[in-house]
Length: 320
Image: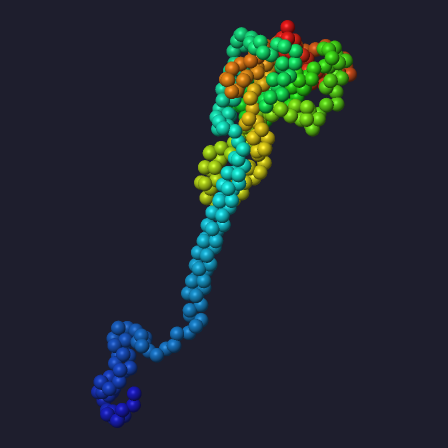
């Protein structure tokens, strides 16, 4: 600040003291110099907008990140709610007591595939002509697998998955005219046992695998997985599991009155029919596994012919 109190001829130190006395800016510069600063805070320099850009960018990025987290959390909860609602809707129509069906069938499988010397059982109600067929036209669960797999909880699921409606089931319900090779071959030749025709003929019978797979996604454990999922990818995997599961077939299977089991081993095959409601074995017969002497024409369908022959042997045991 210019002042008439100083002149060019004055001592520089005196002139500086005078200027500091009358000028706030001079005092500020002096104090800043004493502190080793190039200029005082109140130097009058304007803050350039370019210096604010990094700060503004960080604020914007942080805001976008928070907004993305909020959006993702809302989307996760919306998908979770939708999936839980769908599970609830699919549970509608399930019969009372379905929650214990899988555990009960596992107990029955272990018993049916167990001791080789278990006594045979043929309930008298099955002996009249047509009684066995009538019984199997009730809702029935079916599995046909190796005995070693059926009595091992770790292999039971794979055993059930590998069991389709097969020649044994069809021939038990609709036997061939005789056990001659010609009649057995005529019964099984050209039949796609997992196809629509067999399905129509055995509509009352449901595969055990359908019950296990379909009821699993309606169980509390699956619902718990949905509630515990921490990201949308996990929920998408669970939704795919739900969509792939045979839920409608499982609902039919859950109402089963009977369970039919064929347990094979190297030396014998045991057939068991259980009343699920009464927890009572209606049929338990064991027949030796025998390799039939077949012609070259029939040998390509040996498995189906031998399964059909076993069904005929079981029918004879019931009606004799």
